[in-house]
Amino acid sequence: MLQGNWRIPTEILAGPGRIGELAGRVRDIGVSRALIVTDPGVAALPFFAGIVASLEKENIAVSVFAQVHPDPVAEDVAAGLRAFIAHEAEMVIAIGGGSALDSGKTIALAAATARPLWDFEITLTPPALDRPIPPIFAIPTTAGTGSEVGRASVITDTAKARKIILLHPQMLPKLVILDAELTFGLPASLTAWTGMDALAHNLEAFCVAAWHPVADGIAVEGMRIIKNALVTAVTEPKNVDARGKMLAAAAMGATAFQKGLGAIHSLSHPIGAKFHAHHGLTNAVLMPYVLAYNRPAIENRITDVAQSLGIADGFDGFLNWVLDLRAQLAIPHSISGLKVTGESLDFLAVEAFLDPNTPDNPRPADTAAMRKILVAALLGRLEGLSD
Image 1 (cartoon, rainbow, N blue to C red):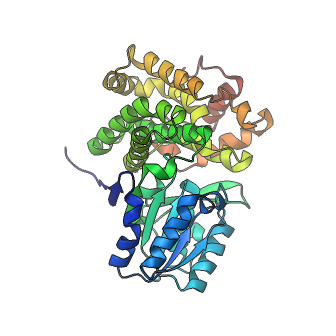
Image 2: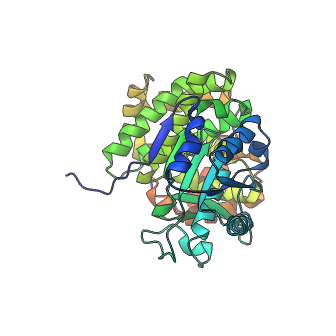
């Protein structure tokens, strides 16, 4: 029966050179003062000065906040909010990877409320705002998180060493620019890690049991694009076609995971918070172990998607493709490569079970199950996880 709450993201300008349309779009919404939120690396790239100049040419006063950590923390948001208020900004333009995009969206959220950020931890009914969230434009320079088309952000609570998912519908950016040329300077390792993040989003969304044919269709096509484009994007960093396709696949993954995610993310979040491991890399390391654990619940679905992707031998063929892809991208096979130690497994298992993605995992996973996956991932062994 046709029923559900389905959302398709915002307006997206896709294609090389589309960043040239940013200033006119800001002008057209009647904004004269903008805060750009980014990180130090992006702020130092040659194209960034051109973006600022194009805005100023349209008489838009620009202030740049570039103090975003790789894993954004609450103080990043507080400092960004101070910059927003001092500039009397009317909108946020977030430029960069997932950390910059999440920070920019959360700064805009903070500008609309006096509540603590943690009041907006993921819930079906977010608290009321004091005023509307200011407009957000999002420009990704990596192809991974898909934060540019999402209503959520991930901010680390340093006091608890936890990554907190914040959610509000108005955090959805009003305009997204997917310009492949802005990703040309991304190192091969980050291209690989962010690409595997996009794969994890599409894959986990497809495996969630909820009925959402729109998200499923997007997720399957997202995985097909990644299969055909990721290695090329890594090995040919200025291949505009592959880079553009990976940007599309990242946005598709974030669109699909409105359906939900699962244990890859549940386990990845505490590892990232405690060991400061890159989120996409962590997802990539964990992916085959969670696939193997979930096999009893997802084998038929994975067999279907394998056929759609032209992969023979059903579930086994798909798992082997993931393993081969990781090897091509120099992804560690064990979480020991993320500096995870055996002494931390009990803590990580508890935190993974408490993660808001855990209820959507296709196979129920309690603390003991999370620890079982972690032990296997530490030892680098896939056998026995589906038992």
